[in-house]
Image (cartoon, rainbow, N blue to C red; front, side):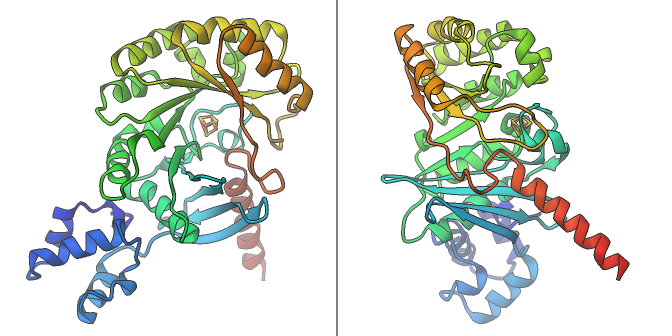
Length: 348
Ligand code: SF4
């Protein structure tokens, strides 16, 4: 157990032998509904709080916090119990508050435009570690309520389906977030998309496409070599047909790489039969990836071009430009800083 949120109600009851059954329910509800730490659960006897503090993991430590957009975006680097670092972002909009959650420490997918991909894979997060990121953000957001969760932080969520699936249920059930407010993002993990197709919870699926040409997509997203666009389209068609849920494609616009008229034609031809909606993302600069995001004018033209070709598209508001908002950058940098500090400490 790495997080108190790894425990189901029955596990809590087992952990508290001799306590009446309603006590484990109080603890479970305090954690999930009340978003409380054990020491804040004043409905429990002090002796029980002390006992719980001994047996339950303390939770992640905030090692870095950055805020941008006049406090409407907050990004944390969280250190887990084994020292692994992940990042979580809270974004307030006028009518919603969204948390972007990590599902792995690091990532094995190696996407060329992504700081996390460049840093490599550490490990999968447990169900509790995924859920607890939402709790950290929700406590900060209060009195505003977190309304949406996107699994777009560090890691390929569907490569960690074993822990993501139960986390979706935990967020939907005890934490009261509607399934349609949960969005799972993938770079095209075909076995994971099949699992999501069979999942009764009607969560949203967003596929990070970025190119509809296999040669170019192979360079941007190495997983495309294993599951090329044709294979991906088949599994997505099955997903849409079985679930009747809307599919969306994420497309980070990179100057001269995937923003040409040819890209527009290829994307429209790929998205139309799947009735997919396209989210265009003006790109954040990533150290080590020597390309530029498309100009605002080209972004607007590209969006219009999709509409003209019968594909619905929106341009995402990019958040946290002045903090390290590209995927994985903050945790990557914090790791570097911690290593440097460790080296300094060892020297003194
Ligand atoms: S974009 Fe996502 S899947 Fe690709 S390396 Fe980054 S975290 Fe992993």
